Image: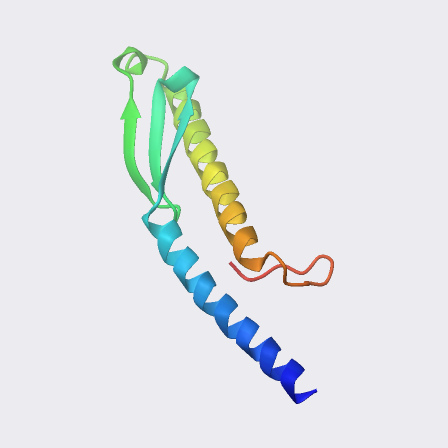
Length: 107
C-alpha cells in the first residue's frame, strides 16, 4: 500500500509540473479568429487576450451594424479556437489518468 501511495503522489506531482508547462506554453500561443471570409480578423493569445484587430477597408462604410456583427463573430471564432486548443493540450497531460465521469480539472 505504501508503494502505491508513493506512485500516486509521484504521478500527481508530475502531472502538476506538466500542467504548469502546458499553461505557460498556451499563454505564448496565438490564434486567429475571422469572419466575413477573412474581412475581419482577430489575433488572440492563449490567455484570451486580443492582440490585433484587422478590418478590411471595404467594410468602413455606412453599415456600422454589419461591421459590429463581424467583429463580434471574429472574436467568438478566436475564443472558440483558444478553447479547442486548450482542451487538446490539456487532454495530452491528463491522458492515462483515470478521472471520474464528468470530472474536469479547473482550467
